[in-house]
Length: 301
Image (cartoon, rainbow, N blue to C red; front, side, top):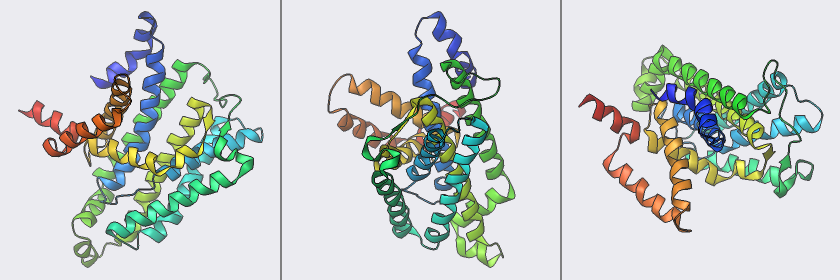
């Protein structure tokens, strides 16, 4: 049902003369991709990363920097963004996964802050002013300047990543990852190299966030240091928790509801964040499996 609505949205928006809906949902799809990638390690691996925005920013800045040098081919720039984010995730994961709990959270945050301040310091990349893109990348047979075309590309890539993540979590790999979350000592005793499994999951999640960052750069035609801020990482975590940990699809619902609430509440008061915090508190207290878990439970009943 949800997928059918997403596919029908552009023609429906055209009929109703409401083109802004396409732009709004494109934004949701991109941030949902980042949230789904985070859910892969938080929901299934129990790895609460507070630095996921770093990979999102690296993906976006890779697109902008390549465009600066005249490289606007999407089939080159987008894979480069994914690889750059994956390499960073491999470095961060190799060091941070040797710790657990609050220490893991703080190390991921520290790396993200290092990325943030690096982007602030490099004036060639715009520093605090950010870096604009003159035009979107060129994708064969697709005109990314058309909002509807960009929308369907974002939707397709989101679905592809969800399918990939679902295959991973339902495979032997996913079973080991969930087992390590429950009892790493037991998995080690059974002979599974849990560090390798967690590192691969961490890299895949970073690559997904990098792809989301690349799409954000295409959508906004602008990148800034805000993409790497700790508040952005916090938003991704809120989306995952709001939608439901360990559900993948729930992260999409979490992104849609969070961004929807932001737009709705901001129209009523400048203190909308206070109201948003109260709503999130209610969800955490009374829908512990998140919105997706709550809806699934209601359907089962």
